[in-house]
Length: 247
Image 1 (cartoon, one colour):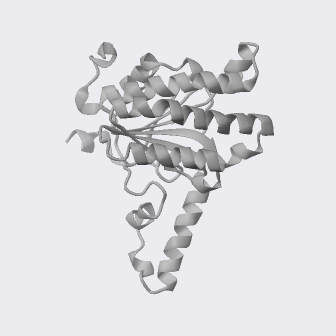
Image 2 (cartoon, rainbow, N blue to C red; image 1 turned 60 degrees about the horizontal axis):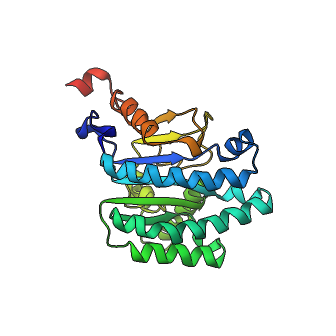
């Protein structure tokens, strides 16, 4: 646990979100099929989850499967779904040992029944853990989440439960799938790609972005440390001037 000893314990991000990218390219570089990269990416999930909890992170959100990922080759999608069930079955003990609660965002009802039941079981078994929340974004779309929130708010207005003049950022946030979860302070994307890929589009308004060239299967605690160190060296102004923040 000494890997983060020189970090400022007062400036650990409360919420880190990660776009786990590069599994396929990592596998290709090793002369293996894409599924091989996804399997090895599980090791990184385990290490970064444990490392985040050790550092004092309160929420860790991992972009595991987007709504757009359904358009990938059927063989890869099936392998991903099978891997998800296997991972859930294998990792519950680790989550319990580390006092980590499992949560999800996205429409998991559209996942295969085995996946849905496996996730449901994992969430039920870890429901009372309170060291850190591990949030898996599964069948998730930032745009779809915004549209769904808009529909909920419109329905409340139509039913006379909400006045249009009372709609604000708080109202909108409370109707997203991330309601009750603070916005990420730090977003990490691996593999060198420089885009958000439809991830937490509302929630990332003032999030610090960190792009790592490392493919996800090679991402380890040291790389997480580097990202947190970079975060701690930044000045977060939220639209104000540096002088205002200093004062």
